[in-house]
Length: 261
Image 1 (spheres, rainbow, N blue to C red):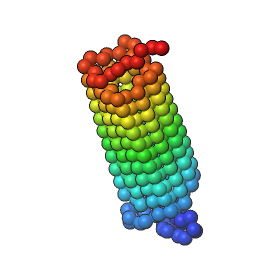
Image 2: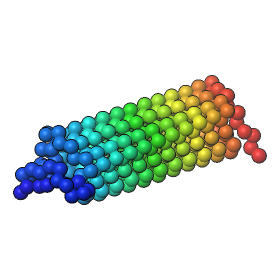
Image 3: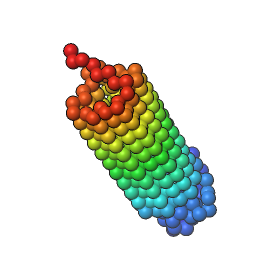
Image 4: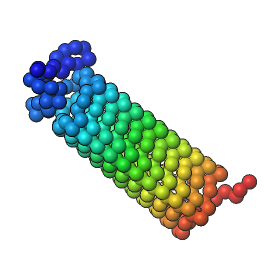
């Protein structure tokens, strides 16, 4: 059986004797450019697509569970509601990729580049996002519970109502990010940069916030109850309605807790 891979205009990009999985693996080995290929709904679970060029490809609803996608180029690709559970996406180029509603549970996205990506409503519970570049990405309503986001770059990202419960955000850059109603409960946020961030109604209950920079952040109605804020900084931060019950405030800088009422 010969399988053909075509682009959105119907032009053949590559063909090979075998099923789609074998054809894509052959294309990967041959370093074929599959820009704008249409692979909607494809079952590629466990496939080895390392180094493949899939820029602007359509993989809507595709099954890539457990696939090896290391160093893959998926810039501008559409993976809306795709299943990438347990996939390896280390060092992948995913600029402006669409992953809205996708399943990224347990994925390895270490050092992947997702600048301007759309991850609205994505489930990345337990994923490894260490060193990931999510600058200006949209993660509204995403589930990042238990994720490793150490040293991730997320400045100017949209993370409204995101679930970061028990996540590791040590050293993460979230300056100017929108984290309205984000849930950081029991998360490790040590040494994070949250300067100029919007954190209205954010939940930091029982979180480790040691040495976090909150300078000029909007923390209206944020909850810091039971949190560790040792050596954190709040210069010019807005704290109207914020609560600090049983929080560790040892050596906190520039904190001006508003008087109730």
